Image (tube, rainbow, N blue to C red):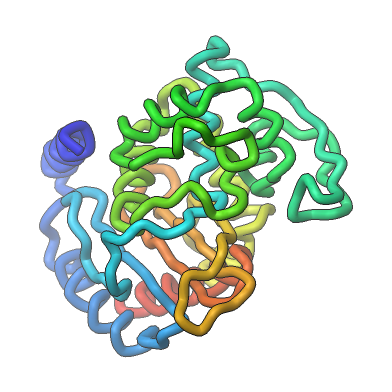
Length: 278
């Protein structure tokens, strides 16, 4: 957390130098954001956190008990990937997804690299990747990003976000992704950020970009076991950060009884509602 706050403080200093913090228009945007989201997206099926990355603060929370750990699904994949990179000279392999029960896409994704694997949230790629890194190494990376991390006995599929065993609080996930995008130029992280941009352009988060075609996004989707009282097979998650080149805001969304791609569509509509207030 100290690293996160230090990073945000550095961003605020740079932004102040270039006149990007404090304009009246931006203040109005922040003030309107909370009202818009509370008015238009108050369904019990929708949970969200909107974060101002420059200030390091939550603008609006529509997520009751956001400090309670829940299954994080594929949102943990980037942190497993960073652990792999750190122990393999920052070189990611090309791997083949044959589909079947090894991936959410039964037809498989074929051969893909880390960028495409992030963009498509390929379970098979990340399970194979996690087979070459220890749970302790992944837990160490997770803690550096403010996460609780996986159990030290976790196997490769759990490290890839499957089965709902790796749990994190929504607050911690939002802050971890804020830290991730702040390190976007670092080896190992850079490839993940490229994958998040590709996810928004042609991958599982394409639905978000279709709602805001004029805004370049970074995105990561996920699907995890449902924890709602009205139980469903799964809930969809997405993290959006924008603008992609130098993110100012981050939106974490969960949609009840839907896959991650549907959560991305919803998040895109939420962003469109926010942008309409400018």
